[in-house]
Length: 246
Image (cartoon, rainbow, N blue to C red; front, side):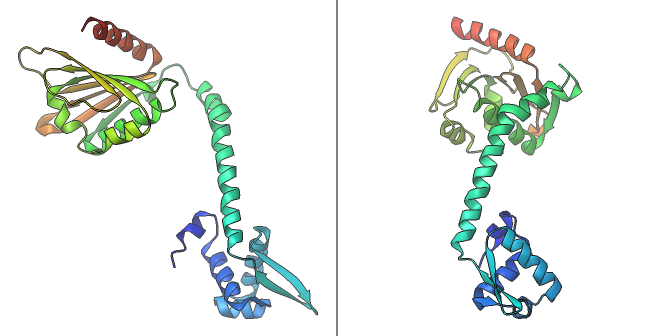
């Protein structure tokens, strides 16, 4: 029996042991529950009180003693539904109030607005940041400059990137430097002819951020992400002007 889900709901291993013991017993006094769960009586009593406060254990008097019984397992599902509703409400409150308030505490610009990433793991973080940023924007779209040499390395750490982008209904416009590149759903592509030797490079403009990815020696990817509305706006103007001329 996989009980990891119960722990994710906030039940401790001890609470799970006591609940399972009580479920097997049906109803029982503390002494029998403690024996079944292999936990001392004092700890068992405290654990039962915690389970009762969560609504999955109840008790009734029987003479001078209390007899405890486990609520039906469906009560645990009710607990999960309550936690989900609370979590959704908390996320909503964070998005509408807390996050904007926290962002207001930040200076307009600091060294933290520029982040460096390297290796496949770093590039994966940048690609995820693009999706996670754009999905919350009204138009769900971003723009890219991409050279031919970078394409075979870009999605190596995140091979299902395009599928996730499409699933999130995010569109992308790409100005491809050099030939190549494949059409994909929710994407548009235009080309610039490249003359002479061309380095591997990728620039994603997803306001308020700009990500720049290139290759160091031995095809080792490195990236810089700049979180700046001013820089992102300037790059977007350049992209729009060039896109309209192609």
